[in-house]
Image 1 (spheres, one colour):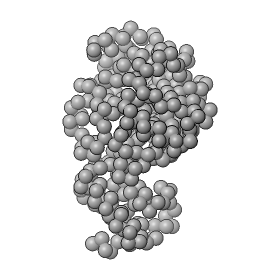
Image 2 (cartoon, helix red, strand yellow; image 1 turned 60 degrees about the horizontal axis):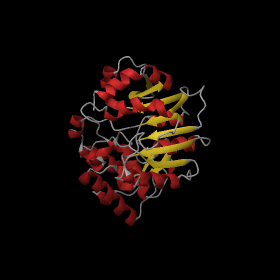
Image 3 (cartoon, helix red, strand yellow; image 1 turned 30 degrees about the vertical axis):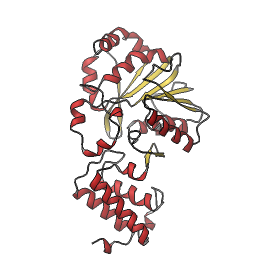
Length: 306
């Protein structure tokens, strides 16, 4: 019975147990019930995520107990991602506002940002960077925070997502160096060039989307789906990116499970598939020079999709 619950550890354990028993899906910032329950409980208590274990035996007030139990119940009944319940998500060691205007921040690219894009950009100068399909702005803003000498543009077609990104720009006080621009990929930023373009575009196939767990129904479909093979946006980005990269510029794109379809579609491209701490995650890096060299093949693949 919940009447027996008293301490922070009690409620984290209870939440994790309830989440596990309910068969929830964990894919929005966290991959397990314990981490989700920890986020939820500490948020309600206004405590930091790196709280010392010494506080684990602290007891909750009656009001705190009520609020924690209410969010645990909503997570189970509504299948709402914890980030939307709490209004916040962590990405690249930074807190971001999160709500249904954009996908919950999550991408292995966070690991690259935390490492300063080393070793991939060790011998390159970056002054301007672009976060294409920015959503909440997490990738671009994290790049700006971790690299105070970079100017970063955030681009998205969704006005709702850009409004949220604007709130995150203000939250992180990076307004002087970060712009949020509405554009259908590169269409609205003609003439702009960047040393680095990073994109986590939609890459879920129609079939995959139809089979997604209930948690994903709370997110905007616009940020997830990308045609029959998940490559509608990735191919367009490949076809147009060279015109927006500096001579030594680099393009980094996440395509997730659509990696195999992309390699099959453009086998001649020298994709550098990044290995993360957890292994391959469908993120590639490619130089502008390689995009130019294989421009005809990319253009043919893009034309065939129209």
